[in-house]
Image 1 (tube, rainbow, N blue to C red):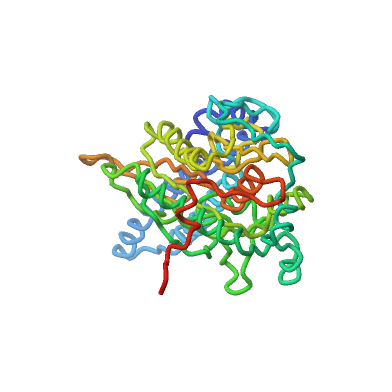
Image 2: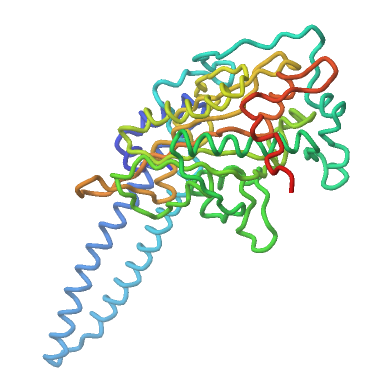
Length: 424
């Protein structure tokens, strides 16, 4: 959520910044509401002083045996007016908050301007696309040949956009989760978490999924303020909701595996084939809390940590900076990691690494206190997929495919795929 004080200090600047995202912000309306709020508060203070003076006079009149009835009526009217103004102030403050909950974050100045992904800027490319002496298959056909991906039985169990992973694919999914967590915990210094997979409304408001993206969430019928987590970003970021963090411990880095659940309400039929866009998928998420003056350095580090997964797996990929029109609602700046899919002859997103600055922290009430004391201030939150596991399976199946329809396993995963139990 944006800072109302920053908006009031520079309404034209905020409106222009949000216009870079294609968002029309009625900052003039917020200025008018705040002026009304301030006027009401000033009138309340004035009326309270009058009421206090009149109350003292009533006491003196009673002591003198005088009729204080008219003055009592005046005090009563003042009280009613004060209650009405207090109610209006609360109403205005609620209206301002509800408005700001629907406004996206300000884009960082380094983000390229543009209406959509066509304006994204390529920062670097790693590796070379694999070359085949045959027509490359997509992961759906590979899964059918190897009997490792079963979409038909998943549809029988649940419906469209689900999959049953079998045999080598199921084991690959499990191996990738362990490999990613081990890398981030043992090499990159993250603390591993296993958070709840169900979150409540306040957590989703804290990270920005609610109220704007309610249609993309799976909501439980009872209790009705519980939702299936759309990403580990939600429970892990809210781990410190309402807290003041010790500045000496920043940055705090967490890595968490969770299944993710999304209704894909806005997909409009895109990527209906295969596992690219499913209602349920696995992800290893990286979440970091950083000091404001260090957060963009931390963003580079976090992105590098996600990239290392792809490099160790030998997967051809690129990194792009998202244009202002392609940014997620809460993000100030985002790097997308896009992996090469031979069947599509194009790069597809496999991780988004974002700096939200203090946008989420303001909503969730997460602050930090400088070493040696001082006033607590809002922390900067960052996160990124490290990686989306299902899409990594797709990339491995397609980039490591063989002519007979089978696929190889990257060397980095061999320790996770072999029999490690031994004989009983």
